[in-house]
Amino acid sequence: MIEVRIAAELRAKCPKAALGCIEATIQAGATPSNLEGAGLEEALRACEERIARLPEPRAVLEASAIVATRAGYKALGKDPARYRGSAEALLRRLIAGKGMPRINNVVDVINLVSVESRLPIGLYDLAHVEGAIEFRAGRAGETYKGIGKYDLNLESLPLFADAKGPHGSATSDSERTMVTEATTRVLAIIVSFGGTSALDGAIQSMTELLTRYAGGRQIDCRIVS
Image 1 (cartoon, rainbow, N blue to C red):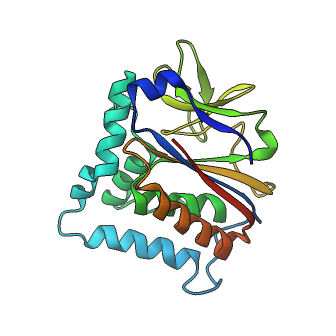
Image 2: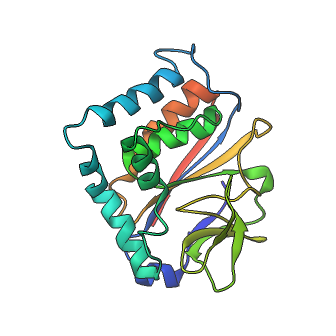
């Protein structure tokens, strides 16, 4: 499995930071609607409906995992009101009635697990990752083109960097390592700023969903803390 480590300076500011890493061979394709069980499309719709039916949907924004992510951003010097963790951004999208984005089966599984766990998740095509990955705070002047976005200001943002530099973050991943229908091997990294206890369930859920909806096999999992 590819080496993933947490930088000492990030750990000093966010002592409860932990990562759940899932590496898998997959079959990427369009979001399916007729696979085993209810199907991925139906699972996405069910998630949307669960949020919509909550008596106070905005209460999910105060979930402990969301609050811990905001605190992590603040500790690193990034304003969590301007740069939100990806799980919070997805939840806000659902609360606004915009629904889950449909990208491809692998990305959709990651988004589903992120919403249900309230934890940010990075997803990377391992064919475009070079060397070990470090979870650290962004440095002054660092940027990359986010997926479907403009250049992202990475300074103080919790991010993932390989030998070529930053390629993902708890807010938005880069185009360089994004997963497409040509991808065959992926690394998903679940980010927790509140310790390891929240990671086991999210790892199990992701493993099951990748197997069911993306032909996942040769799946390796571990927690970095």
